[in-house]
Image (cartoon, rainbow, N blue to C red; front, side, top):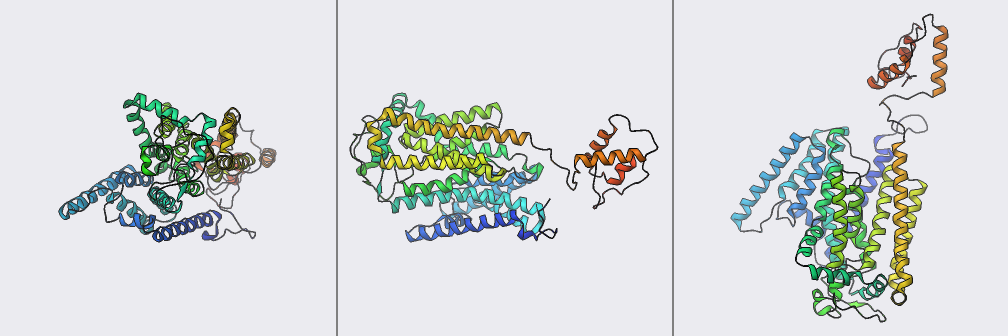
Length: 509
């Protein structure tokens, strides 16, 4: 039931806690996007708001991304409405294609998908009310957030390249000696097994968003039937990781071994060493780098997203679980073997993902002591990893027998704590009380027994046969019309209640 104030009355709709929370989150998100737009304009390029707004008319940057947003929005629609939405989106794209072809403009698709997503929002605001309006607006928000998250990430990366003139790759490369330089090892392995291994891993690495969209759609497949979203799903964690990850890039700018020590870095690379020659262990110093390459390594967000995908695929079918495992292993191999990340980045990405995932689960199902402890542990371990990479890289490289196992141990501690916490939370939810029938308030057990004894004492008829009470309770729970008067009438008291009376208190549920 909705919360009540001290006088026993329900608060105004706009003062309910959930409404206040969603309003505050919306205002904060809008303020963040506006601030990012202002900063981007200061550096001479457009921000996420401008980039997403222009795609209403102009050629989109990514058509599949917009159709992915449409797919998330359509989880709130029926199958008939989905077919209509897809038909409208395709028709709008064909019309834009013909106009751009006639004007010799840039060609791409996806405008129709964005138009339909915005149309669902207009439909919810103008033609629906109450719960249906909220459901349609949530679907629209989910689809737009997917696109906005991608635009926000691109803007963050441009800002990192403009504001961080030097990178800390030398520090991470030195610290990576404690882990036996996995990027160099896997890079040589892929070179030896190319082009088969590289061809497969390029697909795995590049199509991680598609795999995540499929898992997310699987989790949201019953929204149209149940007319509500699940409390927690993959898309929530994906968006939050993409929001907070680039902020860490600003604190710890790193470009990756293929740029800092390989041919992709061009004239800015310290030397052409990756993946054949290990970099020397010397006193690390910040490396000046160009103003184009994103500083997007610490932590590895591809690792964080792959870990989140793996976690959420555990609740699916066997095929989905195997696919989640394959994508996790393939993504970790690709991030190292292509020279995009160091091994230290991957450990930080795992801790980062589990911390964010725990916080999102607790925000959906309620905070408990185990969840608070795990978020605190993950935050502390993540901060310790970054501090050790920055301030102890030489010591870590000189003592790999100590720091290598220690890095794996602290990361494994977070993984183990997450597994225990998630298993305990799942068990608690499975053992939780059965959902109540809307509109009914079950009476305490002692009150039911006392009322039953009074009824039988006053009744002149024989006692109910065995199982009658249970059958009546099941019927009342099924129909939702059981009242106090009906319960007494079945006991022979001669009293009866009106079905559906709002002031009656059911005694058998």
